[in-house]
Length: 182
Image (cartoon, rainbow, N blue to C red; front, side, top):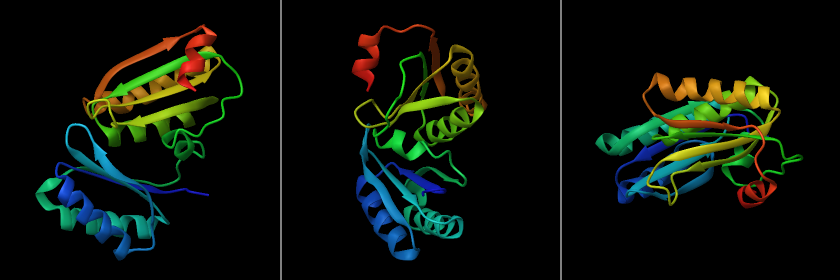
C-alpha cells in the first residue's frame, strides 16, 4: 500500500522529463505520474518509503534548479488519496457533495489528504491540472456535516498559502450530477 508520495512541479517540459529520469534513477521510488499540465508545466508524482521519496525529491530539486515551481513530500497519506488521483474510486453512496478548487497542484494534494482525514467522507476525484489551466480540484462525498468539516479542513490548507480558489458544499445534489462526476 502506498503511504508516502512526493511531487515536483516544473515550468519546463524538457527539464521535467530530465528530472523524472534522474529521480527514478536516484532512489527506490515508483513513478505514479509524469507529464505535462497546463499552462506548459511538467509534474512528477512518485511514491516510495519516506527516505527514498525525500532523496528522489532532493535530486529532482537539484537537477531542476530554477525550473522548480513547487515540491512536496507527504508521508502517511490517506488510503483513498492515490485512487482519487488516478480517477479510480468506487463511491458507495450518493450523498452531499464537496468541491475544493486550488491554484496549486501540490496544495490540492495536501488539502485532499487533510480533507479525507478530517471526517468520514469518500474522495471522488483529485484532478491535478490536466486540461484545466494548471489548477487542481477535489470532489468528495458523505453526510452533510462530514462534507462540511472536510471541505473546511481542505480549505484551510489552501487559505494558508493563498492557493484556494473556491469551496462549495452541495447538500443534496441531483443523481445526474454524480453520474457525470463518477
